[in-house]
Amino acid sequence: MRTPLGHIFVYEDRYIIPPYTTCTVYIVSVLLCICIILVAGDAYAHSLFNSAEEFYGGYRVQVATTPEFPQIDEISTILIRVTDEDFEEVDSFTMGLRFFYNDLQVDAVPPQSHQGGHWDIDYIWKKEGNHIVMVDMYSVNGDSTDILTYTFNMGTQSPFGYIFISAITVGALTFTGIMTYIYLPKILRRR
Image (cartoon, rainbow, N blue to C red; front, side, top):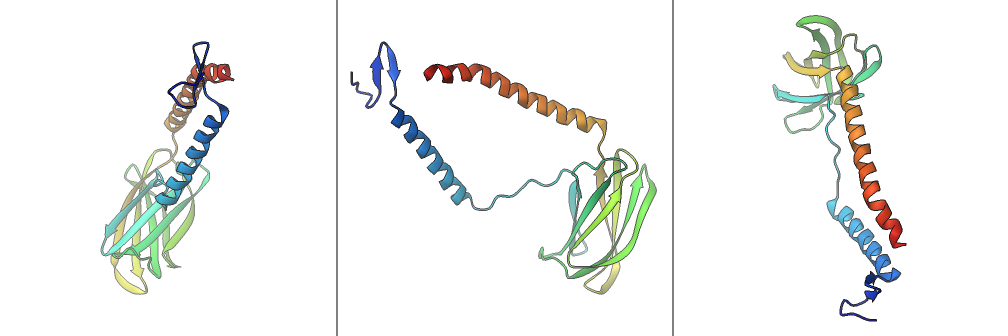
């Protein structure tokens, strides 16, 4: 029996939707997603958790670590990027690093010259917790300037990090389990 609802039929007090209607909904959904992706253009990832930037003396220095939470006694990479006030990468720079823990210097990397605006250095963190990393820039593009010191706070993985990640994972799995328990029987009953 045809109803005023268009292509929806009523049979024994239940609405029956023909399969082509469901297929049409899926096709429209996919086309809508494709349109959104094309219109959205560029997508940008979030900043790394253990990252920061500072603008000082006409230059911007950005630092980050990979992995985002360095592990104790394991190699991590410190990523450094130097740009000018127009956010253009510099051609070369000379830079050194100093590492502080509880206000005591625990390590240092002597000044080194680098071509381009990037410097990736492998480093092994020895102590757990927050460190102050002082980045000393001695020259940019071959011009000797006063030493510019940029200060960054960087942390290593602590047991709290594992607890946090575990709590988020358990929460997501619990939510998925509850939604599956509620909606899966309804979906299977329709078929």
